[in-house]
Length: 134
Image 1: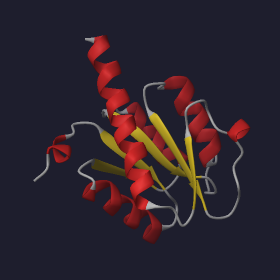
Image 2 (image 1 turned 135 degrees about the vertical axis):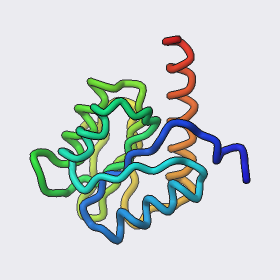
Image 3 (image 1 turned 90 degrees about the horizontal axis):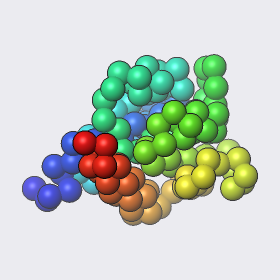
């Protein structure tokens, strides 16, 4: 297959709606990345804390649990700054002020190619920062 399918780092997809999560996972995997799934922020944090190398967080905004996707995105930015953050919502418009610095916002339905480009940018950012830490 293509060289993009050899990525080591994964994309963490956080979406509470199972069909939307499956669709997002398919998008990530078809782009050649490993996909990790979480149905809410609490599950996502458990995956992040496991030490799995993650290049991008792709999260919905509105979901049940202890925090929404914006709170999760801001927490990830503060604790794992090397992770690219992609936020999507079909129910509300997110302002730049609500997003962590450098995060990407997409309204649903989103353009799959733009999501893939953002993930690829996150992969490059992750591999560059990982190379500096070695």
